[in-house]
Length: 387
Image 1 (tube, helix red, strand yellow):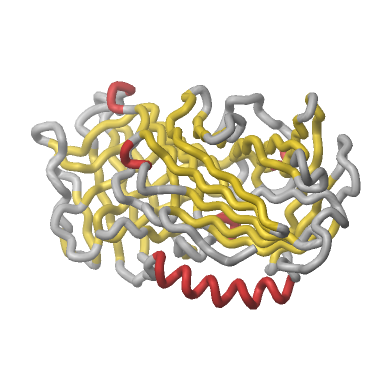
Image 2: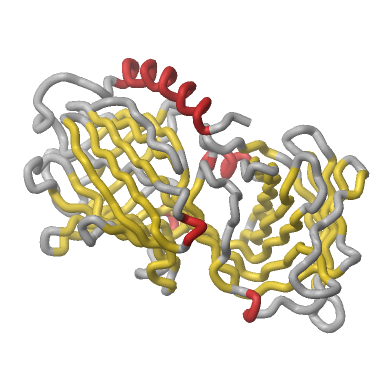
């Protein structure tokens, strides 16, 4: 897999072509045309009923294998398996092509795979799961995990992700209840046993079953959008409609005006609630003050009230915080924002918790007179593309 330096070189070359195609960098007055909505943060939230992970102790290739399970009314369960390399790089395996397309990023490979998942509750509350899939490299993976007891809230809470996805995500992981695996648990790759590392409790392995797993993330991504429709003035109902390079439509609508705050809802795909204000010196450009991802399909029109979901808060000058539901300020740090003639750039530098410090978020948005945007977010290393 590509390292971040090689990815940056590849993306710089690709973005020169993309900017020429959609006219992102354009000479002329930045105050003409529609009001610009430039929201460069890829913020996402999802809840899974079950997560199972095994940390491998002696594999020459992999640090961990994990699976997430979520039942869905009226359709097959959503299954997401992640294979993590020794350097923390991850590949997502998804059983739903539409979900795989929605989460795809050049910084994080994603493949569509059938995933078999079986779960049984044993006498006493212990849980046995078996997961089978074919990896992105064509390997047959089988993870068989039995817990020593029922998942306990005492083993839940805010999760340290270690070095997993260190150059592609700033994750916020919260577990409601968890239990370690017994020594009979196993991982096989092409039929070869992969020893699981010893667990933190005597008589256990470093594999865990979690019941209730909240997964929030600010992720690295590249999104070129052409504006199909944009408002000349801000009012309730004002709408921006963008088209991506694959023909997908992304729409945002003003749903409330509270003092100087403009509340905007993403009305396609997964819902976002954005709070923005007019820039004090550039009134046709909106400043992002907060972004909340609810993880709910926007078409359902059932927006949960705050603080539900993952919230990135930028309202305090020079600072930022990330919260998950009622768990406020799980990640905090300093925030820098700068503006060029056709650019908005944010740099978020975490200072706590310690594992988040290397995962600075560099979110950039370039825009032209017509309101087309090119959004690029990187984790850990800045991305330079000019004004």
